[in-house]
Length: 77
Image: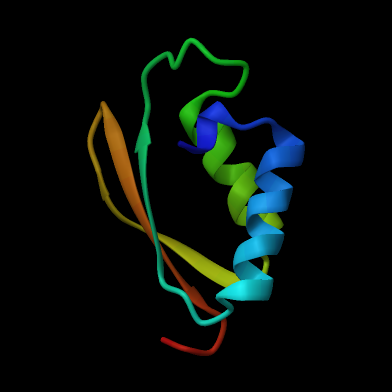
């Protein structure tokens, strides 16, 4: 769903998570093909990860078509 948002939406989602659910584990499944939206999958993921600076993101699986990232609050690994 990240690539359906714009940069302001990504920032707001990150703020909401950091404020409301600061200990949440985040799983992102990112489509690597053309999304047909202004933001492409990995661009949206990178923007979200940068905005959610309370969490550390790690790619746990990747293919040509998609990637899966997992994020934990910093210090909670």
